[in-house]
Length: 316
Image (cartoon, rainbow, N blue to C red; front, top):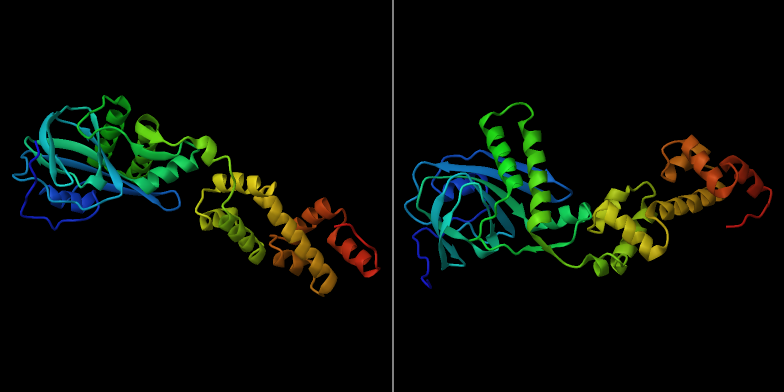
């Protein structure tokens, strides 16, 4: 213990999946699938297999804000370094799941033939997945990289990924996307540590988020809630809840009130047709606009314009 890893090749740095991972372990191109998920996330799975172990420890992959979730298909011995310092000499058991924090720049010396399925999971994706699915807010995996878990779900998912790689067909990509989503849900639920969500999700939007959301809905009366939520850095569901806590009404109701005020102003102060006003106020058709206007104002747009021209006063 206490020894430091010194290798000749310290220049290999990149994401821990696909071609770069293959290069680090001296392997030909790996079966790999990348799933771009959520609004700004990705997940990847790669299969590593070799009848002969590498002669040296793998070069550094570099600092990655991600985890590697590894399912062993064979018993294997390895030496492990984290942040350049020797950590352990372990016997990894076939069928077990190991989680490695890639922020610690792990390097290994593999001492046997090996076969693994490696799931690359960026921390940003794990956090976004947890938020979007209303799971506890993800902070970390507490599992030590030297401790394997007997996880039958991961065994089955890794086996399914390996089979999909071995027998590619038209739907293989969709199948691997579903496997990656299932792995994400499983590791978050089984291994993730989290903050208490009560205090974090009981408040509303930050002042800048509320201001930006209202600005967008004022500037573009037809803006979608997904666009507004993305601008605020939130999922649609989280944005809707937070907006209502901050303002007392749901965002679509706030947007509708802005549309109605704009429509009333245009009916009063412009010569635009009702169809033109409908489009300017973010409605898909004149009939949609007329229905919404009658439900919220009490009369049709045409009747409202006539009464306004006659000087009849309306309550706001």
